[in-house]
Image 1 (cartoon, rainbow, N blue to C red):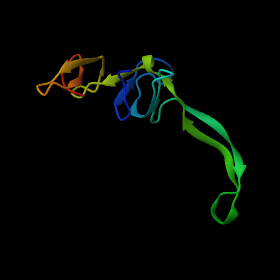
Image 2 (cartoon, one colour):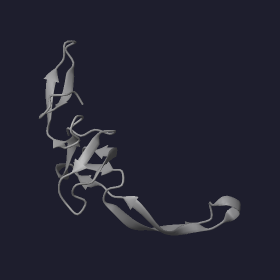
Image 3 (cartoon, rainbow, N blue to C red):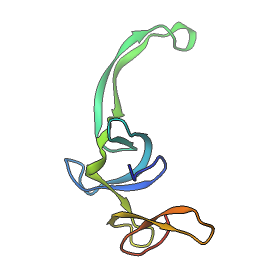
Length: 106
């Protein structure tokens, strides 16, 4: 997977198309990523007695759900537009990711 945790990505398909966010977590075995503020779902949380002074906490919470990695692309550092990811070998012999249109290191 060419998308890593901490990358700034643009959603290119689905109901959140056009939205941007930072990758919170990557799940390579499932080919999915968790993007901050994208693909928000409502989740019913069970009531627990773990709150302050024994207060009951629970109810409906809004949280991000994983989105397939094919529906996001890395944002180009220059233009902030979606771009494909390539690899280059730098002067130190290390493999680095680069944005295809600009050639800038990500």
